[in-house]
Amino acid sequence: MSRTIIFSLITLFFGLIIGLNLKATPSAKFEISEPFPSIIAGSKAIDMHFSKLAERITTLENLLNIEISKRETLTIKLASMQKQLINQASTTINPQVLKKEDPEVTLDAINTTQTIPSNVTRTAKEVLASIGIDESVADTIKKREEQQELDQLYLRNQATREGWLGTEKYFEKAQKLTNGNNFYRDELGDHKYDRYLYESGQFNRVSVKNVISGSPAAIVGIEPGDVIYSYNNTRLFSWMELTSLTSQGTADELVSMEIHRGQQVIDVYIARGPLGVRLIGTRINPS
Image (cartoon, rainbow, N blue to C red; front, side):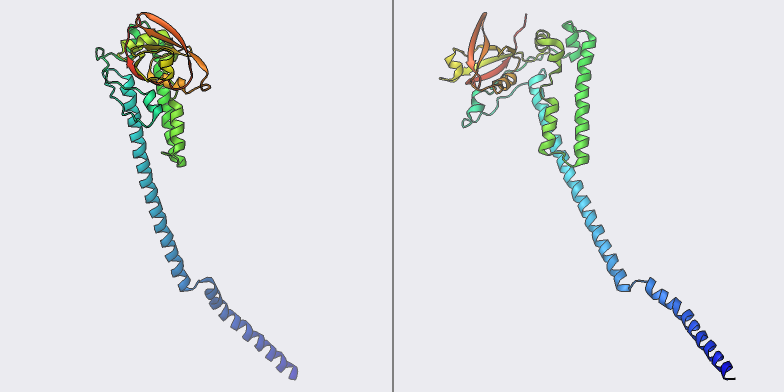
């Protein structure tokens, strides 16, 4: 009898424990699986804050890119205008403002109001054909110009994607794409290029307007009106070419210069560096 009672009590005891566990389990699971309401609210507030902050950053980046783009557009327009002033027909080259306190600018700067005659309205291809240049050569020049333009577009795209558009890095790379790229001179050679410049109404000679007393140019006998035909055995067609050449090589090394004075040809040697002259572009019939 006592064994039966004991067994019954044990069975009832375990039954009560199992029943309590079954009732407690759903409640325990519910409490553990759900976060506290305050945590939920705080998390949402943080998310909203960072979302608004990200939107503001994106807006600022877009505004910055717009300003950079405007700056680059103005730079390109300025470069285009400068190129037109020197290379296009029917263009007047205005005198540059020369700073007296800057001897490098004063000594070797263009200073001219001469107007390039507008006696031609032909395209570059038509001018090339008129001086006997094969159409295939003209096409090659055009392709090289278009390739350069395409390279500039790719550079801009890369700079935009990588975030350095409008920076010094961008302008240095853009300048490298254009520096030294005279497609016409490369393809035509000096003689035909000279004729092309003249026939298209562009300057093809560098003339001396005046000479600074005591300057290297004055010492070797250069006079106003002289045409500087070549420098260090390199033909000259623009004052920019001469300015570039005087800044290359070793300073003060002797280099040759061919001077045309009327029908007279004069060879001189001069120290590489500033000449001490003011230069003007002029047109002379190569023939």
